[in-house]
Structure formats: C-alpha cells, structure tokens
Image (cartoon, rainbow, N blue to C red; front, side, top):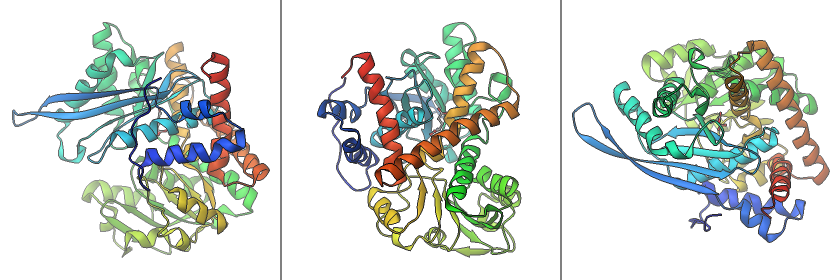
Length: 423
Ligand code: GLU
C-alpha cells in the first residue's frame, strides 16, 4: 500500500469528502482502524507529463493521472476525464467512488479513474487524438484488459476511446480492444453503452417512485447539465415514464418552460449554437434557480459540489437522482435527509455506465455481441437489486441513502480484502 496521500482538508475537496464518508460509514460495519486506513488510501497512482505537438507546431506539455484506488474485487475500472480544472484529489475521489460503485453493483471489478488537465473545447480533433495516444503510451504498463480498464467520462467520447484502444493494440502488436470500454460499436463496443448511465439512473428513479408512491407520468423534471448523461436522461424520462422536462441547463445557462422542453430540440440547439439557452419559446433562468425549482425530480448531471450547505435547504424536489459524480456535499446530505428529500446517490444512480462497460468487457473476452434488449434487461436486474439493497440498509440503520450505499459497498470490499489476507 502507498503512503497515505496528503489531503487538503476543505469542505469541497472531493477526496477529503470521500475520507469523511468512509469514517462516517465505518461505525455501522464495526470496521477496524486498519481496515479504515486501507479504504482511505489509493492503492497506486500514476502522474504523467504528456508532450503533444499542437496544430501550430509548438509542443505543449499536459499533466495526466491514473489512480488505481482498490483492486481487491478485480481489475481496476473507471473513466478518464479531460477537464481544465482536473486535480489529483478529484481523480482520487472519483477512483474511490468507482470502487464503491463496482462493489455495489456486485461486479467483479475494482475502482480506478484517470484525468488529463486540458480544455477539449479549445482543441482540434488532431490535437485530441495526439493527446489521447500520448496518454495511453504513458499509462501502457499499468493498464490492460485484466489489469485496469479505462472508459469515457466528462468530455471524453467513444472516438477518444477508439484512439486509445488502437494505440494500446499497436504497442501490443495485436488487437486488444478490451483494454478500454465505451468504444464505438464497430470496434467492440457494447450495444446499449451510449445511454447506459442515464438508463441505469432511470431504473433507480422508477424504483424510488414506487417506494415513495410518486406517479412518474405526471412528474416534472429539472436536469442540470446537458452532456451525454443529461441529454439521455431527458429523452428517457419522456420515453420510459412520459414525464415532463420543465428545466435544463448547460455550462452557458439554464432554461425553463412549464409546458415542457423537447429533449431532442434542446440537444439540436446545443449542437448548432453551443448552448440550450438559444432555444426558442423558453425562459432563461439563473443556474442556481434550476436547483431550487418546485419539481418532482432533480437530476444533477454535470460536476461535483453543486448542492451544498448554501442551497440544500431550498431544494424542493422529492427525488434527487445523481447522474453526476459527487454533486452533493456531506453538509447538504444532512439537510436533505432532514427535509425528507430522497437522494439516489451517485455511485448507485450513475452505475449503469460501468455496468454496461462490464458487459462490454465480457463480450470482448468472448468475442461476442449481445442484443441491445439483453443488455437493457441485464442492467435493469442488477441496478434494481442494488437500489433495493441500499434502500433496505437505509431503513435498517435509519441513515440516508448515501451512507446506506457506503455500508453495502464497503462491506463487500472489506470482505474481499479479508479473504485475500490484506487486513
Ligand atoms: N465514467 C463512468 C463512471 O463514472 C463509467 C466508468 C466505466 O465505464 O468504467 O461510472
């Protein structure tokens, strides 16, 4: 095990939050100090410098990370983010959440995460390709279909996954597409991976609505973020439930329309004008107002720390479905729980992505392809079971859904660490 990393303790450092969450959950499992210490420490971290030739001929050096948090239950698994504000602590937190996520869904995988500090919106396709290939060359000895399998995340796409899987295959001297998931279909991607994160989230919303007695066909929904997860969440809320999207936003601003926003028109508007805000027939509202709207379901589908001690008391939604990773701070969790808001925590709500990634790994190992309906069915079964194990734990211990998810997941990780003789 690596030395304990230095962690800057502050309210919004995601890794400090992870460590707080582990401590808070440990008492329900009677964990020993040694077990807690192992859970609080990333197993392995790689920091890389990536010199990339830019289109103007200059070399620019990018910083990248891969954190393999815990592989007690199987090979590392988790996405790679391209983001200008990426930090190693964010990647550590996300890698830890991947560990809990795979355990919660009972996948035979560990948790890992990668990140590169860059702004993909300002880069050409050629620059992105060279950066993606440079990253794969740098992490090559540490990843592999049976070691650690990256995937897409914020601002990374199936095309980026294809370049990385190609680079890995070229170095190996043979096609090794199983090194990456979230690939295009023509390169061993799985049917159903594109909307898997949002679809898994919808199945958890369906189960939550059942236990809370909410009629989803009359539900009003606000979606914060309109990337892959947010856009598919909007279309699936309409297609699976007949629910109405009354508000949406992206990095440029927020829109509201009581009669309902057409998810596809909003997406087309975002593609053609860079923002949903240019849609005709909608009202532009302030971003913070979206989180405080009187809706049935609020779906944070963008970044960390958007629901905090400052605004949690003003949230009126009955269900918060966290498609983003880490959108709610621990203080906000306490406020929401006291106010009776049902939070479907991130590593349960957004676990559909990694679950279908796991199906992609299985198909790659078997050199086989499943039908999309089979993928949906298998995802539904796994995530529905995970939802109810979390819900039951929250009832049993009278704790919020996030703590309950921690209790279920940490129990499984610790059990395997014990069997392997780590603790
Ligand atoms: N990036 C996604 C997540 O945070 C998917 C990870 C994966 O497919 O490995 O869960």
